Image (cartoon, rainbow, N blue to C red):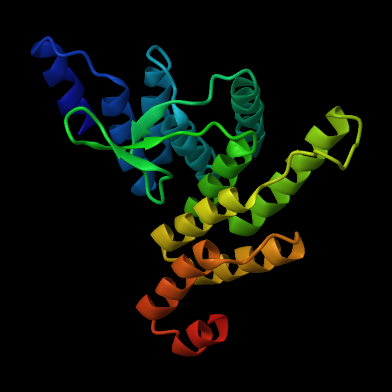
Length: 220
């Protein structure tokens, strides 16, 4: 698709934009063609990386087990968000946040730029790459490093919020990972985060899809 689409666009004097690159990269990532996904997002550097671009990059690096590069990219993303450069609009992704209509009726997601957003994107990427437990370990380590940078203060320390876990549960739903979703519920409970409808809904829906009736009833 890439070898056909991009040259065709150039021939027609249509410059590929961020949506073009994000769509191609996401398609390669979903097909587990991570090297090609990374090649596309690197080309996108000359335009602008949005939240979806980082999401795909994290997933691809996780899939290739290039964890050192993934962590370096996290710090880049974290700094960008803290400096106020993380809030953008981008095309709807699986489990997107507040959905609105663009000028042409296209569904878009308003990126809120939460401080824990980079942590969320790392964990979601690890989930989609089939490495949820590794992702939880990495995120916990990153939280500790951020806390140490802030002088080790527990009050106001940056940690994954309920909203971030809800996104990660949607990522589990997208990948059909019921066991992973149940593990995330346990992690939320361990962290003292509320288990509400937004947390239970994607898990119960997966129980229904996978005919795990007993587990679904236990969650009600």
